[in-house]
Image (cartoon, rainbow, N blue to C red; front, side, top):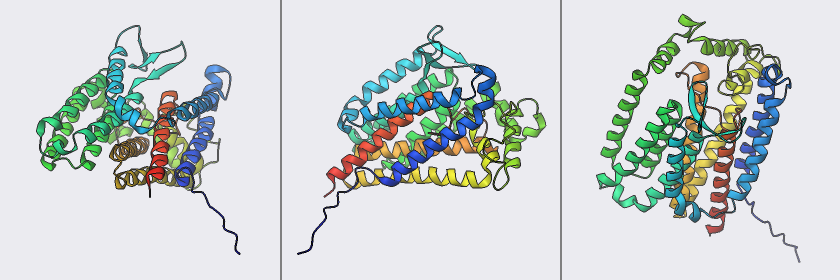
Length: 377
């Protein structure tokens, strides 16, 4: 009589978990390399930023471990409350004494003298949760009722205005584009969708041209070498890093541009440091990991939709759009394809708020995967 072995299915998507862990570890390694000189100069400790990023990752894993315990029905029921809370925080961050100004932008609410929360990161996740619930509740109306379509757009317009007052044009673009993607996948009336695309594009174009600093960024990225020591300095230094990297790079830790030439080397322009030190091969590996990461997110969403778990599906799609957009914009900025924006590489670039919110989003995705497996026949 043959022995039989009862093979238990995995708790979570192994490829998704692999991509998350690989990106997080790769990010820690590159943050350490990119920040070692500036950290030694600012804090007399070469691994200051590395230790803080590691602390944020550990804290994010702990918070994610709590979030994953809540079923998705909880988030569906609290979406409106979360949205109202984030809008309140976006308003508070503009008040003197509450909002903390860094590099000319009031994006943080200070908790301690050295610790703060970047509210725009919370707004990205909250937008996805709220809109997923709205799409489930008003799915039928969105195809025929204009008012049902305009309600969330009006709400997100208020969010956009608050973000632009900080100012944070990059997060505004990511949030609006993510909302558009979710609405499109929900199957809204095509006429409404095209109208929204035209209106949003026109509004963002006017806003980009209305502010002098945004106009300067738009004109500079077209020809950064015309102002290589002025408004185009950051981009030209990034392009130099790409040119120095070649196929296989100068070697980990051997980059030159991070030595006070390239501003924000461990945050917004970490991709340029990767290009210089690891070359085309390093860029290719990271791009493959991100592609795997985003692809598995959309697969989770598709599985949820097939199981008639539409709220879970919309959340997965929304997070997938958000991560893909931020990754694409960050790379485009570093390569000089897009105007300079203050957007980080999720899980990779240095940033406490970005890391914590991304860990929460990943915990939601793991919960979706878990509930998918429980609901599957």
